[in-house]
Image 1 (cartoon, rainbow, N blue to C red):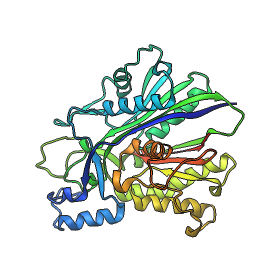
Image 2: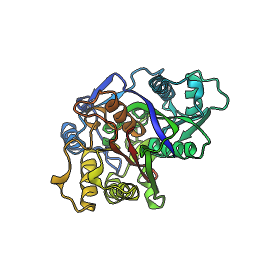
Image 3: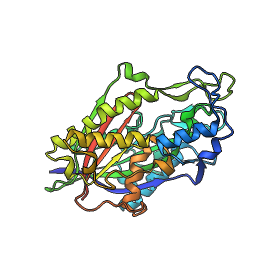
Image 4: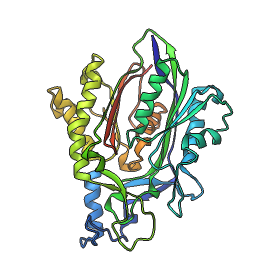
Length: 360
């Protein structure tokens, strides 16, 4: 039976560490575009209490673009896979804003990020097709799902799937939510193999609510009317996203597990998109509740967290966690042979997806 198996991975974390204290000199504005009178340190502390974020990573060099990050992790993943880069049939790059000029905050999506990634990796193969995946934070997951379908349809044999972001260049500096987002990239090489074992991608499911939910996470002008900068900044309706995620993400995760013939008690790791620690904890609890299990039934360490130190790098968060765990760079966390792993994400659109993967 044809299986889609990860044969290599790579990740990139920018070196610049931005602690919460770096935001203390900012006057934040509310949704009515009025200055918030509450002291900024108090705002920051409440933010940290909810999200658990204490610092994040930013790209420091204005000359480094999102496609540079993608190309770097592409090289790392190909090297880790031990293959020739010319063997790749597809390069799928998930992102939200393309390349963003650090000074003018101008979004550039032509040429596509995937085409630029292929170019910067020096791939000459004319049959290697670049494909951009813009699907909100679940973009890397959706890229994996697309790759799995292409591999099992025998359209391709080896596919590079990357998630890459420079979100520090897309935030409104006067919006409290700017403290959530960060930069980073990670990716994997997927290969199709004829194997009779139940390994690789076992199942997946995607749900897209594009009615009123489409306005939960958008781009908008700054909350500060006097801000001279980007006119397309990330804007979130946090409460709506929180309620949506808690309602539907657990259902999607359960569906993927159940359809494959397993239960939550069979799962070794749940890699959930890192957007808000409080939300992630609550989603995991609700998954177990759907199986009639309480909080005390949740195994310690089943859902690793990186948001505290890395922030929310959107499409890069899940593959970053995977690469760190597989390389032994994640304290007290590892992935072992035959482990059952869930990749789950929610984001702009609104879109939700989940993948069940068994380690080779």
